[in-house]
Amino acid sequence: MGMTRKFAVMAGGIALAGGLLAGNAGTAGAAEATPQAASACPSGWFCVWAGQDYTGRMQKVAGTNKDLTQYPVFQNFKSWYNHGATCDFKWFSAKNHGGSSGVVPRGYKTTDSASHYIKSNTWVNCR
Image (cartoon, rainbow, N blue to C red; front, side, top):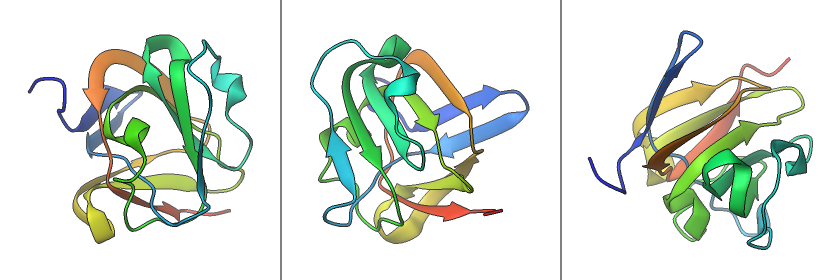
């Protein structure tokens, strides 16, 4: 599958397959390329890091986004954290909420050596 394989993980009985991204102007941000912990992800955001163990550049997204391809880290990341305050994060492997999809539960975080991507997102199961 190589370095640009789809975001896919099986952990804690949760299966994710496809890709992760964000696209509305003003809803994503990036941090500098310094080592960070998952705790660097602000409450209410979904964050990804370029490197394993929450290192490298961080990109974050809040809100629904139809096109995350403009944010480089969402196209090649190894760590992620749904620090959503009230919702689960639903990602899609294609722009405009198309292609494969999966849900990352609120509070879920993980890291691995594979490269992942997402192209659009929404928030679901809000409580």
